[in-house]
Each structure stands twice: as C-alpha cells, then as structure tokens.
Length: 156
Image 1: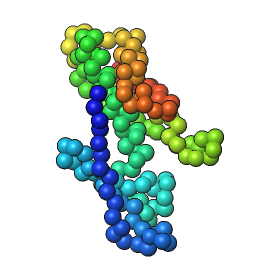
Image 2 (image 1 turned 120 degrees about the vertical axis):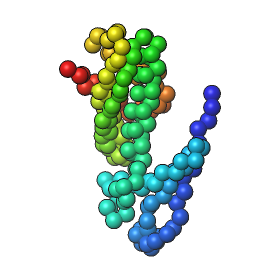
Image 3 (image 1 turned 90 degrees about the vertical axis):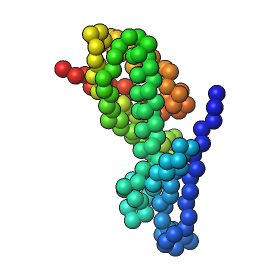
C-alpha cells in the first residue's frame, strides 16, 4: 500500500559524548521537504539536554494518533453526510512503566471538539458512531498497543 519515510539526523555538536553531556538536538526530515527540530522530552532527560522548543518523540506519537483519528473522522463524517466546519483536539498521552519497568506511552486520550455546518446536524449517537468508525479505521490506532480513548468535548 505504500511506504513512509523519515530521515532522522543527529551530529555531535557540543558537550562531551563519553560523559553523557552531549546535545540531543536533532532533526526529522520528511519527503515533502519539511525539516522539524526534535529533541528528547525534558521528562526523559535533564532539562539541560532537552530543547523544549523542539518536538519530542512522545509528543509526535500523541499527535500522530490524534491526527489520524481526525483525518479518519472527517472521512467518515463526509461519507455519512455530515458537514464538519472545524475540529480541534487537545490530545493527552500518559507515560507509565510496563511490567519490565520500561517507560511507555500506555494511554492517549483524545478530546475532539467538533463544530458542524449545514442543515444536517449529528445526534450524540451519530457522533459517537462516527468516532467509533474513525477509531476502527485509523491506521495509527490499528498499529499500536496503547489504549486510546475518545472523550469528545460537546459544544452547547
């Protein structure tokens, strides 16, 4: 069906590598020509070695789950005849330790806030069905063992 590529680049730029005081800043480059600054999370390494302005792998993981759910949701809403005007999500990932004591992102909760346009507005049951179908069809959700919960923020 396709392959997906990312180029990750790190070069020793500062600090003493053998003492562990080296910079962890690196870049992610993608096929569209976009390069993104990346760094470990300040939750994973001392703040002196993390660039809080860069994207860390854990944030990217949460964002990819959220983005995939949104894109799949937009598709299933379109197929069901509902016009989506806006979609916002403040997704949250939680890191815990597994049975071997290794940290992992064990849970991600999506908090989509969706506004609909057009005359046909979904009921709460319609929207729940759309989220369920989006979760079932999301490539990323089908690729991970992380528990993913969708907790829609309902507009008044």
